[in-house]
Length: 280
Image (cartoon, rainbow, N blue to C red; front, side, top):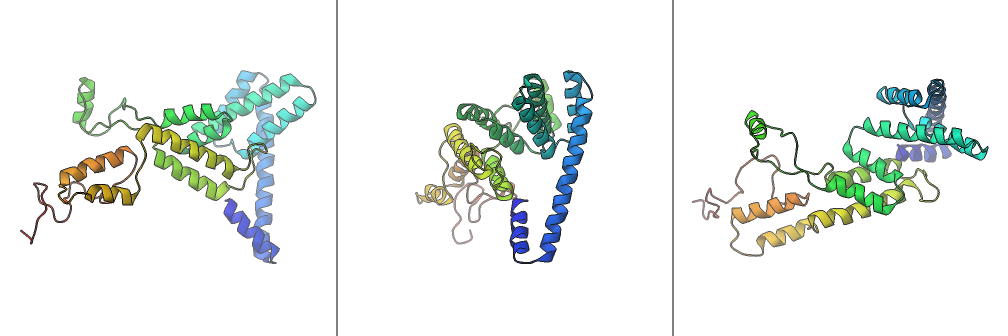
């Protein structure tokens, strides 16, 4: 956690012995991980044939052994081989690193992190835009979750109830992911030409906003939603429902929506959608 390391460094510089002890322990752990990564790379290279090497990387990824030291060592070996004029070994190391990154992405816990990693590796803004469009565009589900009746309808070729096209990665979830990564790792410098991680993620977040706006339309603030809902004195619950659906389509939540309230009525409204006056 970048913020945690920053605090420890500040305290250690001010003479906090405990903070310095933690930093020393972290340094030892980092060196241990480098040593483990070195052994894993030697194991991969011992397979001899490129296809078998890639198979070994797949196995390591499934075991959770592909980490940053492993990737950095592969990159360093590729750079050293290229500097020495050994083009073949350099290309092999680069290919192994790319396979390791791909397999590591497959093991990621969330689709948002997978997408962010893909975007960070892609230097071309047009290609990043294509990745974002693919992830943000709502798609019909091939397998319909829910009731047995819905599943049977899908088998019979009928439209299931409450079917709603969904994007692979909802834009709000992706933006929240960007914020979390920036908070924890924003000061890491992973590319000297493109800037530190925070700079790159800000660029990606801006591109994501453009793509999301193109797909869903410009989002409204809570105040704008309230103004739109109550701009007329006679607004029924059915009008509010329409506005709420529109907000959900944009990946937003209407300010009056109750996510846990099921089909409960808004306070003050009757079953016919008309406002009740005087408790009647």
